[in-house]
Image 1 (tube, one colour):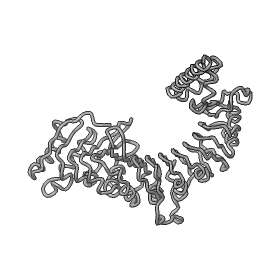
Image 2 (cartoon, one colour):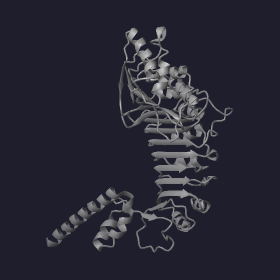
Image 3 (tube, helix red, strand yellow):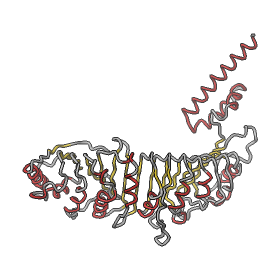
Image 4 (cartoon, rainbow, N blue to C red):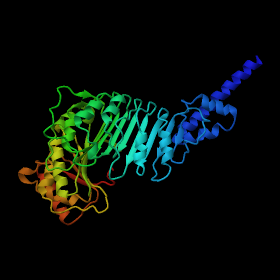
Length: 459
């Protein structure tokens, strides 16, 4: 009985120790990879507890450029290997290569490729059966190319930045458990067609997040080889977030081929062009009901781009469309096009609060030669807006436009407007005169507008 009792106590102690060690893993995250080496040297009991639960404690051998992998004695169990390296060094790459050669045990790779990247990629050869997380970053002019023989069937998170993989479709088709796919700054040499990417996405039933970002507008579908959308679209059942940067033609071909019933965040960045023809994007938003629940919109101008966002809450963006251009006139015309023809009318007509702001980037200047009609063209689609919020940078300019809405034009723009909120009040001068004409005209038409100050505006 005494032996049995002692055995029970030992088991309880082991369970308590395991929970304490597990708390360290959860609390310290990646740093816990370093802690277990200290724990196993405390005593035999601790060593047995740690090595007895390698999966629960997420035990890994972390290898970097300073880890002498070839010289390291086989004193540890055959634990999964995590390879981390982000420093631009000429030395130490032999240790990274030695770790990559143990491909059967590699579970994570996070590398910033700079010097010696050719030797590293030569080691990334066919299959990595235990790999679940792969991140490859490059900041060199000639992007490195990952061999097309690279396969990782258990991959859950793939992040590439300026790193083309000729065999990417083959890799994605084999990674059926992928939950997060991030392709940033895709070089023109790594272009993948909308048809090819959709074919890959259709085999990823657990994909929740997709980043698709092209480095330049050169990456676009060939007009001669573009095909009509198929009669049936591929359903991405788990996709929640979609981020796209590129040309509108590519986006059109992409969204014409997919349905994402659970999509909760759509973030689009388009390279500038004079005319945006995006009927497929309009239909995609219309058939995704989670994207059409908004009562406010925010239009932001900066010296880099212009964007319109439909926030889900005060701190999260539910639907965003940005145009990458610097010229104020192009920004204004682009935004007018977007609000008039790209977004479904049902979405625009739900907006009751509209914010127009200038983002505070260094050197942000705005030309004063913009015609009043361009501002009115931007405001025209928002027929349900009751509250209009103007930052101090744009209030005088928009006031000059609104003063033209007199006589028969009183209700031509913002017919339901009730309140005008200003970031700063302008008690005298040109602004007072311009906004006074607008307010007086609305008063005569029995559509009064109240003016007040509101600071700060939401970010």
